Image (tube, rainbow, N blue to C red):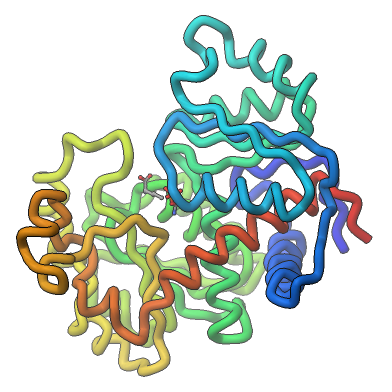
Length: 332
Ligand code: CP
Ligand code: NVA
């Protein structure tokens, strides 16, 4: 097994292809152990800080349950609970947390903050989402791909929608790292930043993968094994709803788009939470007031047999557990 002990995980490129695939395989093993009731308390007696500047269902719960399964104690610290760059520098907070905790998870706005935490805390730091990257999500997504197709290399992985967000960046670079045929299908104004595309292309050259960025839906989804989408408006950009609906409506994942892949075995993935139309299923009165319209994916696709979104959500826990066990536990 690769030596990951003591390492932080801030973005996909922190790890080699071998290390990244090892984490996915370790997650598979931990998932199997959990299903069979085999304990794996690799972090017995450790204390883990979970810092959240933004809300979270999956990431928070995955870290919490994974900590407890591994024998560690999780401590949730929300945005109003501690001083983080407000009354105290992030560097000082990092040093203090590092004296008390054995590992730190951080979800927030600026990626720089998670880098400062990693630099100054002296303990492994794991990125639970920043505006730039969402690397623990990529691990869960690729575990789901491996469970469905038995491999990662050569998989035609198409991300459709906002090509500039954290999830798009992570999947592009992560897919290139492990040798996928990874495609971003987005309007030109939402293409990934050139330096991220360049980074992905460099990794794909080494892994035997392919990188495509296109605004053409027909071309983008042809032959796809995976169609992946994310919300059109990420946390922190709530003022952009109208603009994004105008730009991204042609990129909505519909049954018509699914058929365009020409692949009956294709799967649909979404990191969640998702905007799909619940009114059609539950009636207007119950859901209209929650304002959950149909945006990036139709309810039909979301609930179809192609959709593996809840396996994917479960896999957040198994993969996050693998990251913590590998970087903080003493595995063989
Ligand atoms: N996919 C994901 O990160 O979900 P949460 O925002 O609920 O953590
Ligand atoms: N791109 C989304 C992902 C949520 C898990 C966001 O940053 O809000």
